[in-house]
Amino acid sequence: MADDTTNQTPDTCSHNCGSCSASCGERTAPSKLAPNSVSSFKKVIGVVSGKGGVGKTSVTCLLASELMRAGKKVGIMDADVTGPSIPKAFGAKGPLFADQNGMNPGIGAEGVKIISTNLLLPQDDMPVAWRGPVVTGILTQFFNQVNWGDLDYLLIDMPPGTSDTLLTVFQQMPLDGIVTVSAPQELVGMIVGKAVNLAQEMGVSVLGLVENMAYFECDECHKRHFIFGEPQGEEVAKKYSIPAYATLPMDPAVAALVDAGNIPAYDVKGALKPIIDALEALPEHVEGDAAAE
Image (cartoon, rainbow, N blue to C red; front, side):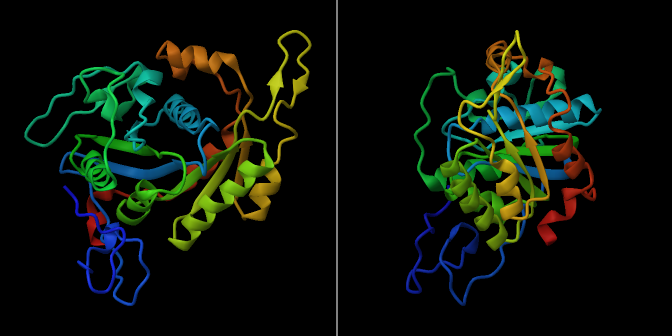
């Protein structure tokens, strides 16, 4: 289990910079994790939100579904350790099994590979109340002790906010960039700025912004109703120099397909194309050399 080093002082410094948020002259860049010997990732993408309730996990699922529809091999690491929901959306079930190389991930709809605490629990509704160091240790194991195989994309679904988990992923995992998720409210736009600024301070590229629940479209007249006010994502994207922007509607069909464990059946009708194009434009790499960075 990892040491609790998030609040080190010069007198208590253990030189474990990877889990310490203090800024000091002794800080060194932590080495990046690498996957195990039977795994490789061409691209590693984080999906973040500055606050909860904006549909970040739904967006992660829809991005994965769109990538798989394009023929990509995709895995999802559910980094929302204490509030996991990815397995439900894809109908993935435990228990999981291990071999001499590591843990085998769960397999969801359309063949997506998933690792999540909910696949390790005897009951879906069993609470997970772990302190930060334990969560950090689990995240490390999810990345480098799971038999992911050769993936085109590993998507990391983060918990909301700017917590220990975000620091761990930003510092220790070889991210190619993040996609941030918001809703059309001025308050949410401000919170997006917190996540974006943290990413930029830590040298993590912000690839795109998805404004979720931007409108509701009437089934009969097809008029768009802006439940939370006019979309503001385009302005937010410009303010923080985020290169790609997309909007998604508030659609009850998403919730129904998540409940059915078949989220890949949802058709976003090309709405996520700007984000997908931004991900596809990234250079490919193999993470076997990540630890040397």
